[in-house]
Length: 633
Ligand SMILES: [Zn+2]
Image (cartoon, rainbow, N blue to C red; front, side, top):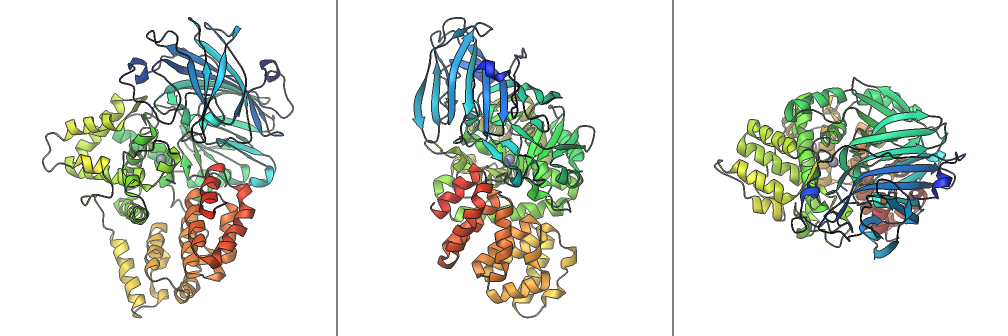
């Protein structure tokens, strides 16, 4: 995911009726063998995921077939989820336990390779974070279980947008966001990143709309869509979207899906995607998923991007018209190796997904756009990390963070991302670029389609570093708070020049219009605005706005940085733009700091609440959970 800080059942007979507003999805049995390490694990070696009720060492789902009807009238996804099971002989009496949250379960049937009998099931009450456990009793021989269910309005994994919330305003839109543990709110599943499964689906939807998933689309006709994911993936990578969509090809393997009004701009913005694949393949071996497409979502999408396999979900706020924010695509694409191919086994190990991915993203940016831009992006990330960590509890500053009893979404801070990437850069500096490339490639190849823990990585790293002098204090880096003093920090000459100009302006020795801003990149603007935090005042805001028209800038990153300064300085001319920015997109990365800053000031708190009242229906549940907490709703 980019941005650190991220349905149901009717009776089977009903599902096969072509409903006027419905979409029917059916998932088929897939014979492909999985490579899941859990299969070979014994009870004692399986590392329990604190965030799932499942007991995969006893009974594990290895394939799920989804048969769904999408009903935009009622905002309900309904149908069946049919699990194909692996049962461990040591546990002949063990039930199947799946995670469910905010789902209405209608019934459970099963059998040996078929579905021919009702099974005994019950809901075991869990808590507000994990949701409940659906316990299904299994007689000997039963290896197929079909759960009939439907979603409810209380689920956080699906967002239903009415047509006014889309760019074309012509048709409603639906999209999923499963990471970290939201899949259980639209699919009854063993919702742990340590459990991998293949999936297939048949979805019926209004025939005027398109349906896409994180899988190969095998059929799209008359409102019926079929999908197949042949590789074993964790549940958080199952993804669905439906709406008025158009497709534009960008290359032999790449393309963009988006609303008609957005698709051309998106295809232009992301034109380097094919080249990005070539760069990562050169470093870490083949792209193993077939196609790589990008779905640009309506502006309420709460994250920058989500690395759903074959189909990255992306925010429209990166469509800057100058390709300056495309490191987001490098990031999501990199997850095709780090995260999707080799996955964090639990959410404690999330830094393995994100630290690796930010590191690979930085390598792609360096290769395609040069070292200067890569260094600038690293410096901006490190500045943000320093600022964020200054306000964090020490236990949350740890890569291998303890999230027991907490929502894993609370672990989505800059630590797994940017402290994780700094750790990888230190490893690079220690063993050399050639060696880290070989090491990382071997890590991906030897654990392909598997989920891995921090302990697994540490042990591989210790072996790789055993011959290296001046080695690294792995314990401090992995288990300790703060940022160790050997964290590599690049230098940027472009940023140094900006620092000199800013100092000269503050000293009255240089006028703003003498600064060479014509040639500045987005990254240089962000550094320039970051420096203003040190001496922000109403007078400086007036001068800056007069010189550079910053209130009118449309680039989302620059707008957010500027509006943050405006809230600090109480710069009222920016209020109409602030209101527009907060009511036109729902990306949590932008919302969280702006609402937090406004909430600190008594005079701005009322405005924050008033804007939020208007904007809240636009935002995704993941964003509203964060903002509700900030504003004390
Ligand atoms: Zn990510």
